[in-house]
Length: 632
Image 1 (cartoon, rainbow, N blue to C red):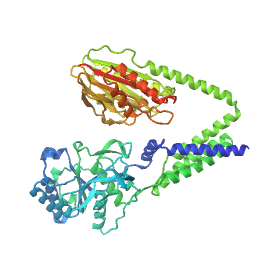
Image 2: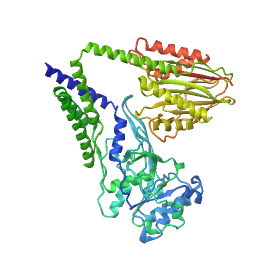
Image 3: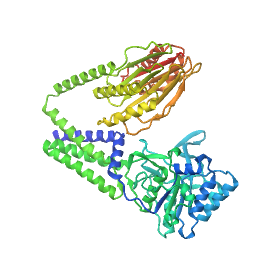
Image 4: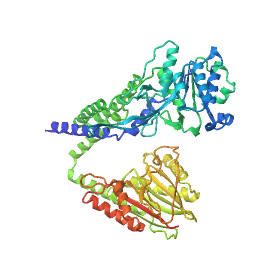
């Protein structure tokens, strides 16, 4: 009987762990650990040269928007000036679509033709494509090419075309490259792959494409950090004849943006603290392809099946053996799995490095729990645990509520009301408002990722930091406030908690509202005489997730009678017994139905509408709201 129970416990525990991991709970830390283990600087290839369209070229040749195509034509002519020292391949990481002046277009095309082995850029725009049959949608392609732009005809005819599409992962880090784009006229490979192919062919060598997934993406093993390929050579220096031809002779020359103004920068796994220019990412990709340094990401399904099997066997072993033996085996499993992950990477296979090192100790902990339950009185243990949890949640609720402002400000310029209905499981929502100076008021609403006492404490720290940064320095730029707060949180955040924040600063005399959004819900705005509508502002990364995040402020002009409603996700994600969400559409409808009411009445109506919708379903998250009416 005991043996059968141990088998059932083992299967149940391994199934639970496998499902939780398959849901993506470890995705972010797993990717970051992959970056730490696999992405290390190597030796940049000296066969790759970057010519930068940089700040120095702007000073020499004027602002980029004033350049015509004669500038890039001069650069290609300079590269071809010494027939014995031409580059092997030249790539231009700038799209030249459509016609401009006939003289400039012709000159650029002739320069490219004369130089030879020139790769020019194209770009695709992706969107949703629905296939219809007999009036019914039969399939949806969410990554269909809905628009494709390539060089003008004369330039396209004398060059090789490669796309320059770049897409980051969900955490804004670029770990994958798109090998090809399928257009109506056929498949277009990436600029970097075309450069690598032409270079290999110029040397009489075979070129092998990297293995890709079903969407055409492949993993990028970076070799160099930002600046490692770049010798500071400006396109202006090239045009002025200041660079000797032996500098590029027989090499790959990449001409591309190397200035912040182009906004062609990306976070990469090799160094998340400094963004890398797109032309440098091309250089990394080219070196990867020239060295055939290809890595294949193992599909999730076989890894999950292996995870289930190992977890089931480990849990059964831990239940059958003594704790000391189980602890030794658990440690051995962690060490062996870590070593296997690294060896597989060397062999060209990328696996999830955190899955087994996390899952096996969890199995061991679960087995310990079962051992303890068998040895202790189950009812007494459960009662003590319930009392402890109830005490912790009650304390967390008091801490959470005590941090909120107690009085509504009596200001002639605006009317305000805020409320928070805490859930049974405290989530760490908060709101705040206070004057920065005689003409500016700050309004904050936020939602902490953690729950219980840790979430409440993290909420209090963040609230105090925002207040201190804004008031002590009289800072009226919300983005600067969030940048400073994020820097402080990241320095002292060992638990890696994070918080979404919306911060608005209202100038009383003018009605100008400056705001910044750190991953929070969209605010809902009602301009004077108009309807409530979602204000789809620009989201920054949540506070505490990453150092060096640059937030951006935006402005909203509040005319007398305008109202702004901000809230946490506990409102939109309130769920009824049918697992339906209240949603932002219903929220906007309720606001519009009471658009002429005072902020206090508006919040009362929203709360009533949510309660009617939820009915008997339990509340899982705090419901926090704040409404401002500008009077002028």
